[in-house]
Length: 365
Image (cartoon, rainbow, N blue to C red; front, side, top):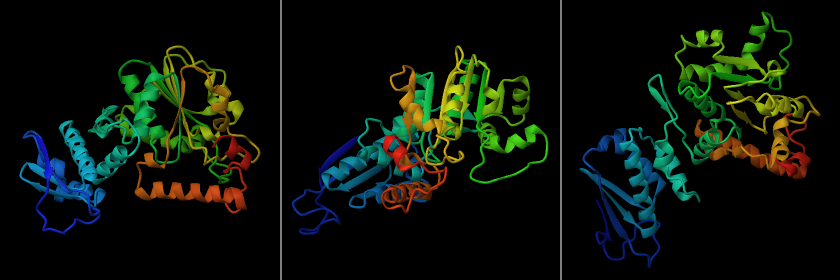
């Protein structure tokens, strides 16, 4: 139950910070349903409540008993009240609230999108090992929906946006639901700007370091003790991209990770491995190409190649979809600004294989 009314609690002439003269100040009261725990809504030490206040610095937010009051300018009060309604729904669904959830919810509400925070943050992909994997941003939710709706999905974006992790969760979900018989995970074995030289050991021992991020994601989603058995039986296959040539992959969920490090020819080879009743997800970051100089990244040109092809979707994630430390998003934005500035005065962008030339930037980032 909610109510909105003019607020006369302040003395005449006193204005709350940030509210212009001539703008009415209103108060909105939200009664929390008895089945919603206040500690879950407000957070430990009222951390969630403090995050709401930080997101709306011109609004006064107070909690008393099972009631929260929001007072300030009408527009800000309406938005803050809508946020609290969404957070109540998130708590009702069993999702833990954190200040980070509040910040992401505010971003969703203030962005020009029809997606609701509660709809995004309560969408369960996979429950495993005592935790539930969910999208955390609108872009991630769109990416997950695209994987469900299409046979081939490209997830393109910077580090930390969940491209590989969410694709892996969808693969495990599909395997558990018996929608596919196996998972095939592959990566190009390209050195990240370093010359590692001769590596001792067997072929498997030489290749494993390149595939380690895929194993790490698997360990988050499947009982580690069962992974060797699944790999031995062929239910899960983790292999370098070169091993895909000449194969047809039926009844499989196939993930190509670090696809920016494929040549155009390798990308064609991989895509044409698609068999019946299979699904493909291709992930990569076109700003981190490790190919030798002069080699065009297959991920940079593939959207032009597949334009107009049905059942293929390209999802572009951005710094707003980063779910690592807040600084990661800031670093990505800083590099983007530096790269744009450098394309005009020669300072940024670099000259090696890790950076697109001006022509590639203009054609398609």
